[in-house]
Image (cartoon, rainbow, N blue to C red; front, side, top):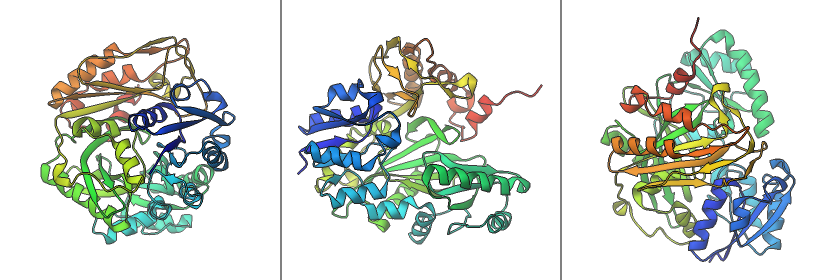
Length: 452
């Protein structure tokens, strides 16, 4: 039984986890950096402890400090949220050794799936379809270039330890491959401390569709449907929706079945997301597994009525899933827009500063997950996500109308603060998105600088 949860994160996800813990009667400890000492979760949690200075490497990513805080404040479980240590197998292993419940899959599972080459191999054996690509890491540039030529350009170079849209490079021209390989390897080594890379055929007009799964320690796995996450810039998602529009029901069913099959093959436990690419012909291909709660989990909650954090905590406590696949019923359409402190007119450059104007949208079936308040100082040290505006409606047209209205109502700005809200409001009116004919190329087309 879990009694006290240490929340090893910050921002909106830390506050979101704390709220579910309070509903469950679980005590909470919020760890924070010096830069976040006045944050919303510090005010909301039962207890709070500073674990380091501003930079993440000395606070949210500093495993000894997080573990010491859990020990010192009597937490018997740690919820990592997303990002930071959420997919760090070493951290999960340390929690296991210290007798602290890690709210997520076991370290052994994360080791298998965190290595993207290993994950591809496991899922291939489980019968999931894969794009042409290397089964193992390609350690030498010449070897990688030869492999890329064999499968045909364009290709995408990916870091074996990559994630969150980082550690990737798309290469259209064979003459540019060696340079891209070298730059991606250096970046992967710096960011992930692992320079291993693999190469995969790149789909230029693909949709990014993912399946939410839940699995317990008793061998039960269910899926909660598919989300479309195709609106991206630099592999970072901007808008997500469920169900995935204009995707045939039999394709969705086969994709969801594949995700469940893959989860069973690796012995998955907890909440996770199987990510797929879908080509124009409707064929889907396994891409990767995210071993954590996704930023976009609220859209799934809106259509299923389930609290995914609650289910995570129940599974971590050793309880079986309280429902079967037949019990999962999705209703209507949900859409999420990520509101970042970024200037779309300046290449999405971060815009930290003090929030002076803050007013959130309301009305029927509108949810806003945020940690921001009037007077909040947005740090320059962390991810720029400020809020997630989520709406639900019986159908997609009504959901789009509701989201347009919600974004029009949103007021979140400051003297130096610009957000992506206005840009996303324009994207919602783009004909291809309105017709659900968009793919991962749409944002690049919208932001492309016209040639003179």
